[in-house]
Length: 171
Image (tube, rainbow, N blue to C red; front, side, top):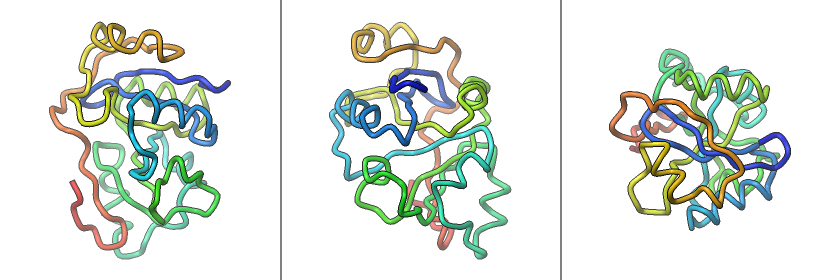
């Protein structure tokens, strides 16, 4: 992952694809694997808030308390993106989707890599995300550079997404 790799790894509710968010070639590979258009944007996750700070401009005063209270946890927030965030990551938006995860494998990956990572479900666009290592390997073994073993969390649905400007629920 540190050298342009794309990995599959367990998250709170399914396996995900991840890479260094500043490596646009790796991000493009994830989008190609998923057959997903860049315009939608991707989520960045981390073990700590400070690893996400380079990607967003600020925590809005109106929602700061709610954001901080929800992390670590399964709530993704849309925050104003810094101009330096690659368009392959933020899509056509002026915001960036970020989350501080509680999942032990995600936390370990971010700690070892010393960075936030891209997180998007391990599946082709609009198909059901993979929930087992075996199914990820069956479909994507030749398309990813590595797979991290581990169990997915207890969630049965994707993370909640909220707008950091007003707290509104998006998903």
